[in-house]
Image (cartoon, rainbow, N blue to C red; front, side):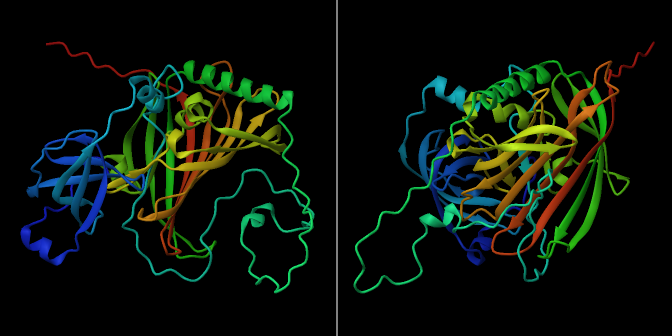
Length: 410
């Protein structure tokens, strides 16, 4: 967590804690910390203590092998840092293409989901809860054959001793190419999103985040607290003010209070259509959502193109993800986005992270209605357990914001 410092580790602590070895490439190097992209694609922050052995004084793009201790809060402290080589940085244009956001304006560095790993409850048996789609599910006829995903799985039955001659298996039909109208709507959605972000006025709204934890069953959510804040959107950046938990003011940073997310006001929408994200869209059909006719598209984003940062104390990932987007047929505006992380590294504390954002037309910011987020939901589950966390977020009372100023005569 930004600004979060764990307990200092003494030489006696080293004797009682297990040391793990990490290999990767240095991303940033500072006097008291080292950020390393590990071989499994995690980005790990190592604290450098007085006893840390760093004879080579490593710099960015050095390949390193690090012996480190992990404390009860999940933070890592390096004991030995060894340089094992050096890699050439990518060309400047590739760095810019991989790091910059879509629009010519900057709203957030990237969509960020910060998870609180210290929540621990005894988990009951049962599948972890899942986010629900915003549009009602349509009844479908039972499939005549096994799902397509099962065709790549090895058969569980042993082959016969004398197999017959192999028969020709009919090839599953390829998905139809995207029609011109569907492609045109995607292109319009990109243009409308860019225009929306570039012309979004300064505003303030109230955000209420109810944080839950589940012991395993879908309906076993227990409310932990309610975080309220004023979200001020000014000059294409968002900030939080008047933070309170269960009505009591909190002076700490909002991200230090527990599970939190940012990017709902534009970064997620902007990033989805940016060429650097290279999202692969597939048309799934016509749908009705929020009493409006929409087209539903599924999308996939690979790890090299992902800008979604999922962060826990001491480490972060930018995983591949897939999801769905509902686009209004008439206005080409996005009404809902869902996204789910996939191929999460096995050493990362959480094995499930999902996000959903609902948009609707808001009055009060001018003569025209403005499409803004009204609800969001973030769900994460701890690896190897049924213990899950869920944040439900509501945005209310949008109105124009004007900067505050104070004049004092002396």
